Length: 61
Image (cartoon, rainbow, N blue to C red; front, side, top):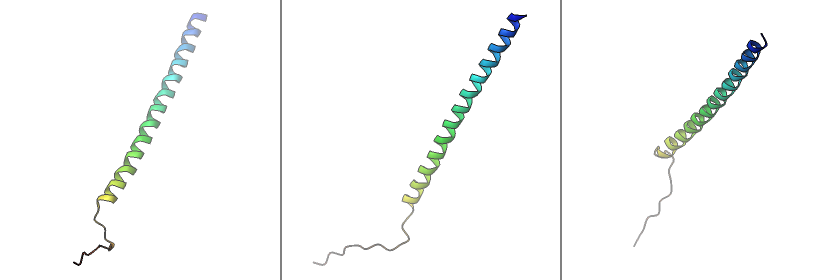
């Protein structure tokens, strides 16, 4: 009977470790996706034509 209890304990420990690893991977993926979304937004913002007037140098010669 003790052998079965050890197997169950090992199985439960393995499941705990697997779940922790899975959560860690998902957290990293979510962080990377959020970073990508911010970078994509900045790129879109920089690529949009400026709607505010800007000063330009006019060469008179």
